[in-house]
Amino acid sequence: MNILITGCNGQLGNEMQLIEKGNAQHTFFNTDVAQLDITCQEAVEKFVAENEIDCIVNCAAYTAVDRAEGDKELCTALNTVAPAYLAAAVDRRGGSMVQVSTDYVFDGTAHTPYREDDPPSPDSVYGSTKLAGELAAAKFCRRAMIVRTAWLYSTFGNNFVKTMLRLGREKAELGVVFDQIGTPTYARDLAAAIMAAIGKGIVPGVYHFSNEGVCSWYDFAKAIHRMAGITSCRVRPLHTSEYPTPARRPHYSVLDKTKIKQTYGIEIPHWEDSLADCIKALLQKDND
Image (cartoon, rainbow, N blue to C red; front, side, top):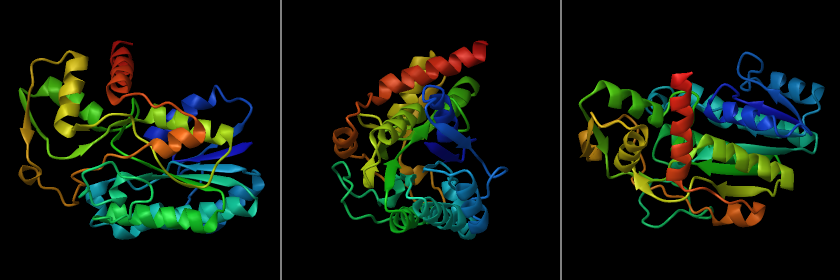
């Protein structure tokens, strides 16, 4: 297959590129804004047609959650309009699409893991535009797979793991919220799940993917420092009210992964096991 990866310079896009090496039976077109402006319908249609794209994995998104509150136009263009253009273009070729979405489509008021058929209720510009992007992908591509994920981190780009490592080395004390509960997701595991779905054949619909297990941001930060051997920084728990942000975060956004595991026969690692792998890779990078 000819597979288009958008947002190839981001966390997930970079992880997709690593996985491509083991999938030489496919031809991959890795693009970011310099190679393809996905907010331009004409450019998208031309690229998809000329390169005979069979599948699109849309890793591109506006992910600056707080900045999105004051930048709705660009956020909408990237998170809602662009998925519609990509979906329509690949559907004309009878192809499939993987649209990556987010736990922010929920308001976080639940107390049990969110299933795919739970009614979404976004409480931020970011969440609203991502939900609209899900609906656009499903509307314009008959073989669209929407994958909601959460708390994404990687050895690439900026993310919570890297920030905690840096601050843990710089500061004697650090406050991290303990009353927001979810599950970290190693982008490498998500990339592997997406490739497994493509390999088996896309079954259209909405799916949830994160690593297994549950924690708070505070627990996550403590685990990062423990695994990295950082002992000089005290991490103390904060209430969300002590750390106000422009965009509201879901207080509970644990995702139920039953559907994706059963449909594609994949096993998902526990978040601590994947975090250990990522930190090992990051520390190795530092030593190289």
